[in-house]
Structure formats: C-alpha cells, structure tokens
Length: 185
Image (cartoon, rainbow, N blue to C red; front, side, top):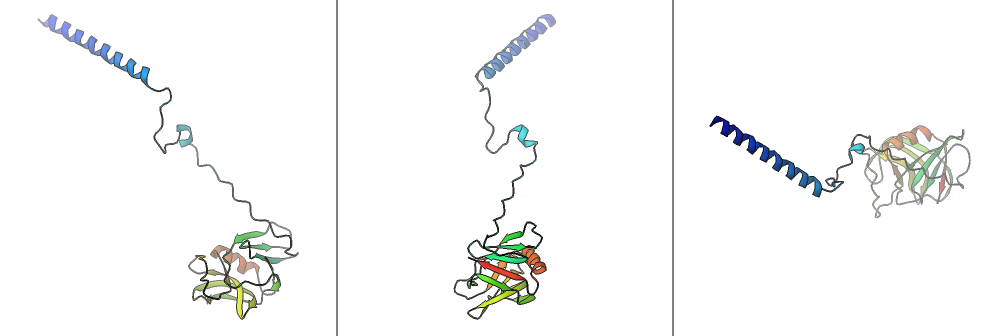
C-alpha cells in the first residue's frame, strides 16, 4: 500500500502543479501589458532621481527712468526695491509691502536711520531708513521684527515700506545717510 499511496501523492502533486501552471498562464494572458501605478507614485526611474531644480524667477528689470550711480530705487507700482551700486554689478532686488502713504516720484536722500523703533502702526521694527515725509508722515524702509509683511491697515496713515528681515539687513548696510533714493511710479 505504501507504493500506491506514494503514487497517489505523486499524481496529486502533478495535478496541482498543472493547475497552478494553467492559472498562472491564464493570469498572464489577461493582465495588461503596462499595469497602472497607484496614484501619486512616481515611476521607478524618477524615484531614484533628486528633485528637479526649479529655475529662480528672473528678477524684475531695473526701471529705465531710475537715474544713474549708487542709489536705492523704489517702484511703488511694482512693490519692489533695487540696491544699485556704482560698479554696474547686477543690483540686489526684492519685493516690499508699500505703506498707505506713498512718496511722490522723484529723487531723495536718506535723511535718518534707526536701528530699532516702534512703527507708526505700533509694531516693533528694525533697520529703519527714512528718506522723506509726505503729509507729515515719515516715509522709509523697514523690517518688522516678527519677520512678517502683512498688508497695512488702510484706515491708518503709515509710511513704512516693509521688507523681509534679510532684505532689511541688506538695506541697512547699503543705504547710509545721504544715499540717493529714487522713487518711480
């Protein structure tokens, strides 16, 4: 009987292997050639690649009507400042948040500076560079100590043209007393 039971086991094994082979063939015959990847999964080749570098946005062009020489150029409409050096190097440029009181387009000089003060809006600010007054309101560049640049309260008359703290550091180093400031529309 040992012989017949081993023959049965061998037969069952052969039948099982044939069934598995048949089911495997059926599955491969009905499977799509290129299975869909789960949503959000990158192709295998892309998974091993570092993220693509995004090209930095090209800085806005220095306004043509901004004069010559070493100067700070402030465009009210573009909400942007350029720190222009005499040597013709590419100027540092950055976005700013205009105040509610705007200076008249023209040429000015830095008249005073303060390392830290409280702004007319009641907010602690640093690196204040003042260049004119309009309707009795001092107009100048500054950075909020908390690093934010929110829209100014339209109900308040303020003259602080706000910038990021790092840009405020650059302005402070660049715009010393009597530095030219050119305001364009």
